[in-house]
Image 1 (spheres, rainbow, N blue to C red):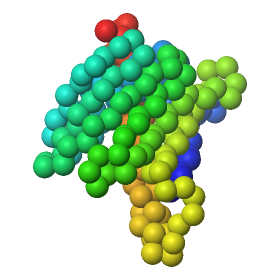
Image 2 (cartoon, rainbow, N blue to C red):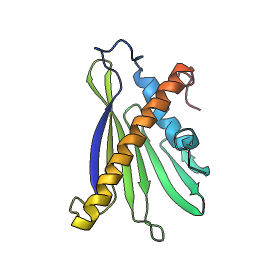
Image 3 (cartoon, helix red, strand yellow):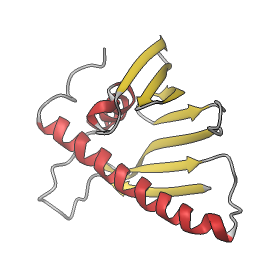
Length: 160
């Protein structure tokens, strides 16, 4: 399944939404990769390893399930999560890219690829509709958490 969608960040026509800067948004996306328990309540543990300025390898624990992935950073632009094949888990990826349609009007584009392409059987269609909905809700929640962190001043500091 390949799935793409946008989440609007700054709406110049809505004065009730506090605008985020590109830096705040970027720091929030990095924080989602490096402190995922703030964003994923059912995540039991995350161990970071093999950190470079451009990437970090992670081990995520959900009960008895352990998933290893690598997150690659393209500063101020995008974050790419790559899960290699591991046991019964197929290779997959998630790309979160900051898009600026006009000055200070940001969106985040979420691109999912489960490695199975766009062709889906009738049996997969129902499951994939559910996954698309779940991904959309999780991504909206990611932006909600980033807004909360920005309001607390936690995204205005330089990245460590």
